[in-house]
Image (cartoon, rainbow, N blue to C red; front, side, top):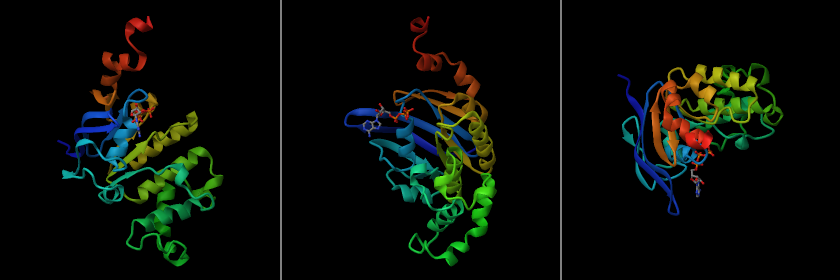
Length: 252
Ligand SMILES: Nc1ncnc2c1ncn2[C@@H]1O[C@H](COP(=O)(O)OP(=O)(O)OP(=O)(O)O)[C@@H](O)[C@H]1O
């Protein structure tokens, strides 16, 4: 049986009396792609922010590899091998894709970010940076300033930056949001490639992407787990259909 790498127990988060995440029990099995889906406002982003330490839970617990990480700050949680993809807004417009990855590799080392201008030091990370860039299909684009990259490629660069941390658990927040069909297909292939040897937790609205990637799907509604199972199971679940489309009576 596969072990659980990431788990939550009765995880709850209130915003001034409003319960955005309500007693969520989640068990993510090692080596799987686990999707979190649900209608707008279901609590997916809040749950993500709890898992990465960007928000503190009101109550409940979070465990990584059996260790209680509840209340740890984001950098400690990242240090334990849980990384989320960066947001485009955090890219430096004038730096190339390669420089971004070199910085990310350096940032996880003991030197910290202080020496980031030292070309010699960054050169130490060149080979690994090029490996990571090749993984996300950036061979031709390594020197291009991030500002000049098309949207889909910026998202791929974010993924390379998360991979630079060599995470055990990779959290992807709507990796295909705003993409055209071609970039969606590329992203699905990419996630399929980078999942090797790790666990992926994915928030995704595009159900075809979920169907192609996810081993297991947790459906949230109103901050609670509404259903969980394989994609085909949850897709056929009456409660899930109702949550997405409204009550059958209302539709017909
Ligand atoms: N900082 C906050 N303060 C107050 N309410 C919040 C805050 N963050 C989220 N909420 C509320 O919590 C609920 C869950 O929001 P959340 O963003 O987690 O949902 P979601 O499933 O990610 O939605 P979407 O698919 O639209 O991104 C929503 O009703 C939202 O308005």
